Image (cartoon, rainbow, N blue to C red; front, side, top):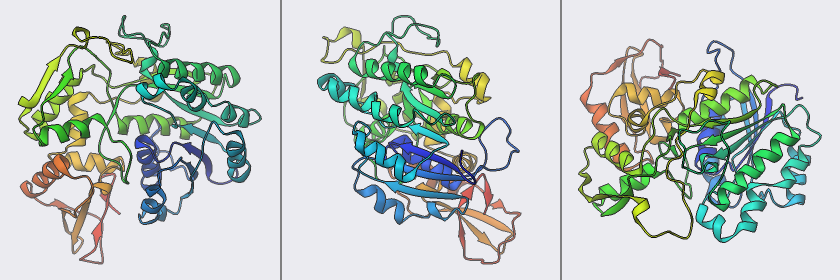
Length: 410
């Protein structure tokens, strides 16, 4: 469709996954498809978001736009349920080679109380209509594992989707609409609970890991469910999946629904225990409780929505992280962990830099990043406890601080 850089529209760009995806595309143009030796794909990104006022200012003050192979245009005030708004977005910034739809009302509680809002935002007819003539556009839609009932895990894509709440209903409805209108150019990723490091910029909501870290740090007694299981997935793996389809495209054999989760099934208390072990927290304030033993809440919740992810693994070639690996990458305790984060474009935002001494030796220093809390604690300990790494890349400025990217000095 486009001549030159691949034109990509990201909706929900100011959210947790949107910020990490945008950061990855800007900082790290290495292909994430099966062919690791392929040339980087240049992008022209239109990052659409709603009403997070701090997003534009945070992005403008960052260095993400310095990559010459990536151009980024932020478009705020975007409401996918507003037809004139969506038409203007496409008329002004289109056409697009790919649309990554991350925008959603993702709170089951909000959806249950406001089903009309859930249907309008999570199943946006104006977006589908804007794409009706875009026969060459690939569409990557973030769906949810909560389309499953939770009574017959592990679920395969061929199993019936029977949501138990309005949120799940709205996501299934849009899956069906997309695949009916675009049967050979759309994928719906049924994502499990996404976990990972904090976002590069201010964000309304981080992940469950940051919530748990806060509770353990403050030693606040909290109940965590022991009988609700999900195939928790690492944000870096989610980005790799999206980039696979962005860079490889979507053909007849690729379109459809995919389960997207990690290699482990875990309860909320399992996650707490793994984090406490990695970060040396006392988890005595965490109390396990069976959800099934409690009175029904306002929003029904599926108990076990663990998924079989073999279809997505076979198509992308990605080896998905298990729970311990997710925790290790989110709260690194070694230089190798930090280098892994850097290779995913996730370390620089936490304030990790390489310091070069005459181009011969390097060491990593903590520059006071925004991550805070246990991330700071783990990373600082890792940096002061190990010997300096060697650097094979000549550096002329002895005092220059170099960001990590793919484990090398740039």
